[in-house]
Length: 100
Image (cartoon, rainbow, N blue to C red; front, side, top):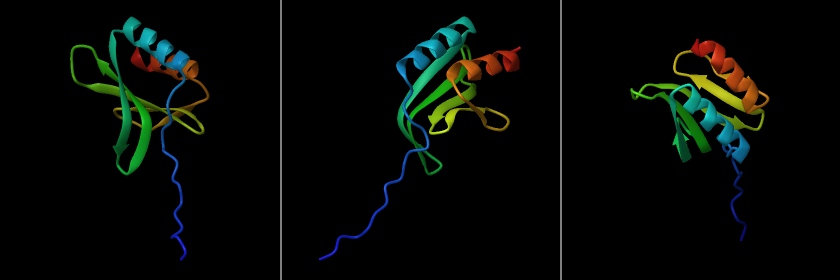
């Protein structure tokens, strides 16, 4: 008897390193944003081990979604195209300029 062949599909988003999470938490608090961490998310057929959201503190409006892919840190603004960065610090530097 032969077992059916199955392929293992990697998730779109992987979990973050703890220093990246701490850096983002401090950045979001400084900029008066609320950070959320969603674990084991499935959205639009993609799976994410961790999906981070940055929200305006006083409203439920999500400004950015952030996840880690095998290529780097991906930032998806509420309006606009995804952006890919080598590290969290580079992503946050870009978010600072887009926030002003």
